[in-house]
Each structure stands twice: as structure tokens, then as C-alpha cells.
Amino acid sequence: MKTIYETAVEKWGHEAQFNQTKEELAELIQALCKYEKYKTPEWRENVIEEIFDVQVMIEQIKVMLNISPDEMNNMTLQKMPKLEKAVGWQ
Ligand SMILES: [Mg+2]
Image 1 (cartoon, rainbow, N blue to C red):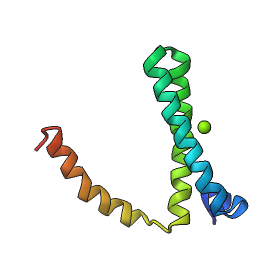
Image 2: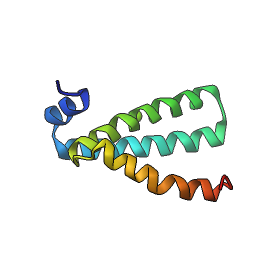
Image 3: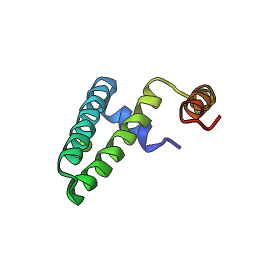
């Protein structure tokens, strides 16, 4: 069975979904800027909404580029030690 992300990519196509991804990323950036400036519960809620939108688009990017869970796990294994070192965990 297809995932909802595969269905979205099929329905709207690669070009539209790449553009949508960039729009959603820009919306998240804007929400973060507004939250930093005003620190209201409304802007916090907006950040949550935009994080969700970006997560949905990231899943579609994975579909469009055939990025497998294994590839993401490999990247986690590569990158996480660097982060752990940077924050002083190791
Ligand atoms: Mg949005």
C-alpha cells in the first residue's frame, strides 16, 4: 500500500512538491523569527504548525529522491557522534 507521501507526490508532481517544500521552509523560518521577536503562545503554536508542514514535505523529498530508511540511519550514525562530541557528550 502506498504511503500518503507517495500519493501526494503522484498527485501533485515533483516540481510542485519541491516548490512547496521551499515555501514551507520559508514559513518555518518566518515563524521562528516572529516567535523570537514576540514570544507569544500564538507564535509558538505557529512554529509547531510549520514544523509539522516541513516534516510532511521532508517525507515527500525522501519519496522523490528514493531516500531509504537505511540511508537516513547511516547518516544518523555518521552525524550523531559529531553532535555528541560538539555538545560534550563524548
Ligand atoms: Mg506552512
